[in-house]
Every structure is written in structure tokens, then in C-alpha cells.
Length: 377
Image (cartoon, rainbow, N blue to C red; front, side):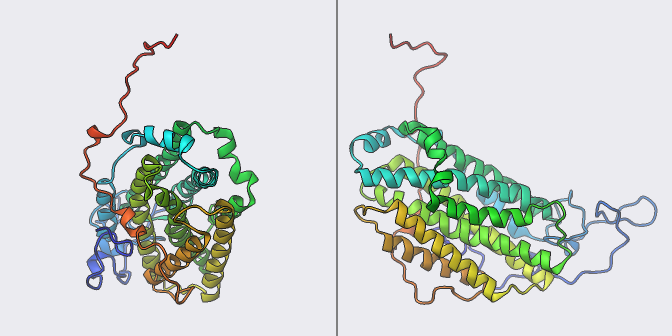
């Protein structure tokens, strides 16, 4: 089964130096402005794995191997095993469920979960694609992050496909993050983190700037994708467990597998940056980050679950956030922000283990109308 704490199963033994442990920098030849090592004249020095760094590296960014971080390449290879599109999943029963089987409270939950997620994945895409990826100085990291950018775009397409399939008014759903304070509050926190590292004048050679960058990376990997997304999915999974909205839930299961990888990769990268640069994050700043995230999540839960739905409650939602937050902190090697938090949704881990051997030809949507030839009048 896919392990949330260790998606690639690499934590059975201490990480060897070849798998990404920090190696002391060795003397190198003079560098040109592009960061490519050169010998005398125009001859380029061979790239050595030990010269690579996650950020602020001097090795040739255009040369993939030799790997300094083979775990990053393995993330890329594994990500490609979870390849799918929303068109592979039949939404016919969801249309029936939404219009004829869901209660008003359940429709409220469904709509607002989608309203939050549609904006969130675009934010995640912009964070990795615009603010993080270009600062990486090892190509094996960038290649996985390029896949991650694609996956965030795919997730956004998935939510749009669900909204369109159900027949919801797109302008109204997409604008909820602007007019619903409880959704906007979470988006504003993420935007603040993103804006702080999206500046053109950022200099990660400065300790203060580097620490802020790492804090933003921690937020997006551990909080935004590592906790908020799971709590965003879990109300839909609660409906699925009762036989409702199973098409939407299946799509979220594929998304969840992606997010397990995004979170694991982000945390692994953060730990490598801390190791290579001897950075110590402020414990109070980390604690404040978790408390702010918890408060925003509680407001969000109070809005989407303003009326209870069968099998899922505000208490379940908030307690699960605290439990997963502790898990993420442990993965980072940091103190738990909510000591004693208990797992309220023991079935949630199962959702990331969708059977990939499923035959899509038995379930995918079939397009019977081609070329606009079918007429209804």
C-alpha cells in the first residue's frame, strides 16, 4: 500500500550519500555567469554529482546525470505510473446523485469543496512552476517539478470537468473563493506565502531570504498540499463511502495519489536544503504557521459543514487536520504542533490506494456523437 509518510519506501535505512546526503563542496574551477564549470580555455570540466546542490548550485543545470539526487528521479518515474485524465471516469451516476439523491446540505458541501479546490490547484501550480522550480539548480529536481506542474493543471481540469458534468453554474462556483470569506481566508494565506518568494529581486544567498523561501516551501508542501488538500477531499470520500458521487470521488483518489507524491517530494527537498545550507527554521514561526492554518481550516469547516451530513462532522474534519499536521511535522523532523491529536478518519489512508489495474475500457465515458452529426430536433 502507498505510505503517506514514505511514498517511495525509502525510509527503511539511513539515506546514503549517493541518495542525496550533503557532501562537502569541493574546490572547482572558475565559473562563468551561467554557472557552468570551465577549465582552462574553452574546455568544460566534467560535472560531478558531489558538486550539485538543490539551490545555489554551480554544476551545469542542463546536464541530468550523474545524479546527485536519484530519489528525485525516482519520484518522476513513479509519478508517470499514475497517468490518467478526467475523461477516463464515468460521471453519469454523479449527475443522478447530485440532482436526485444528495440532500441540500450535501450539495452545499460538494459545491464548496470544488469551489475551494479549483483555485487551490492553480495556486499550487503557480508556486511550483513560477516560484520554486526556477530556483532549483539540479535538473533531476526540476524534471519532477515539471511533472508536478502538469499534474496541478490536470487536477484543475478535473474539477472543471466535475462542475461542467454536474451542470453547475461555472462563474458562480469559480467566484466563491472571492466572495466566501471562509474560502478566501485560506487562499489569502497561500497567496501571501507565494508573493513573498515570487519577487524578481529575491536573493537566496542571503540567510533571511533563504529562510523565508524554505518556510514558504514548508507551507506549500506540508500544509497546503499535505493537510488542506486531504481535508478538502475527505468530505467527498465520506459521500463515496455511502455510495454517492462515486465518479467524483474516484477522480479525487487519482489526485490524492499525486498529492501524496507532491507532499513527500516537497518535504524531502526541504530537508535537503536545510542540510546543505545549515539552516535552522525558527520554531516559533513554524508554530505560528500551524496555528494560522488550523484556524483557517476551522473557519472553512464551519462553512462547508454548517449543517451536518451523515458520516462526517466538523469535529471529524478539524481533528483530522491536527492529526495529519502532526504527521507532516514528524516527516520534517520537527515538533508536533498538536500533541495528542488522534486520527478520526482511519479510512482516509485507504483512499490513496486505488487499484491501478482497473480496466478503463469497462468504465470510461464513450463519446457516441462525433462530428456534430447527431441531431435532437
